[in-house]
Structures are given as structure tokens and as C-alpha cells.
Amino acid sequence: MPRLNAAQLAYGSCTVIFSTLAMLLLSQTSSGLGIAVIALAALALGILVAITVPLPKSARAAAAAAAAASAAVVPSQRPAAAQAAQAVPTASATGARSGSGSGSLERPVHQTANP
Image (cartoon, rainbow, N blue to C red; front, side, top):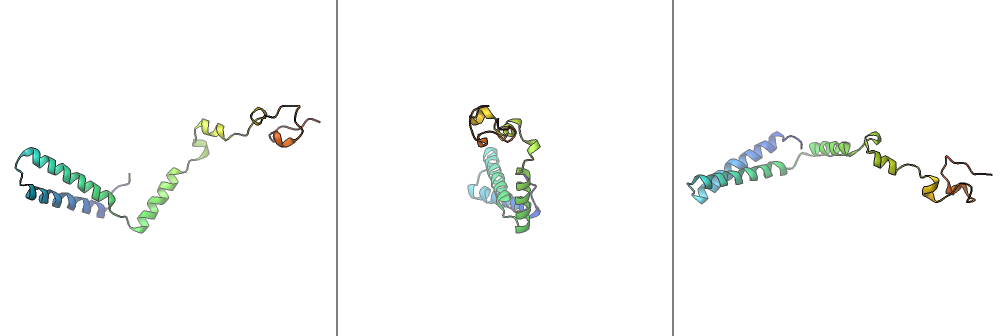
């Protein structure tokens, strides 16, 4: 997860402070449990606001480019099973048997046709 920028941090902090004050004044609670529940609800609301603040267009483009770059996998980093699935099919996989079949299209490139 990327770090929060200054605007996101400010919006989240203000949301926590003002929502805590508003909920404490509206609920008129004086118990420790009530205050703890209100504080946790305000913290959750502040985190939600901080995460959902829209990013500027340049930061949004940079974030999309970073996500695309991290999603691209270099072939040498792929698991061996994925590389094996993309291997050239053999004669047994294509149904061609050596010595049978008339066309070279049924055989892989690395095999030559028998005269």
C-alpha cells in the first residue's frame, strides 16, 4: 500500500477529531466503554476518509504505472509450471507418430519428415 500524502493525512486526522467530538456531544456518554467505542468508530471513519480521498491526476497516473510495472512478470521469474505449459508441443502431444502421417504440419519444427 502506498504511503499517504499530506492531503490524505490532513483529511483523515480532521475526520477523526471532528467525528469524535460530534459523536461524544450527541451521545452524551460518560462511560469508558462508550468513549472507547466512539473513538474506535471515529478512527475507522478517519482511515476510510484518508484512503478514499481522490489523488491528483499526476499521482493517479504514477500509481497506475507503478501497478502495471509490478504486475508485469519477467519470463525468468515465472514458475516452472507456467513455463512448461507454454513449451513447444511434442509429437506425442500433437498426436503425430514418427514414421506415420504425411504432412509436416503435424510435427513440431525441430523434427524432420522421414523420406
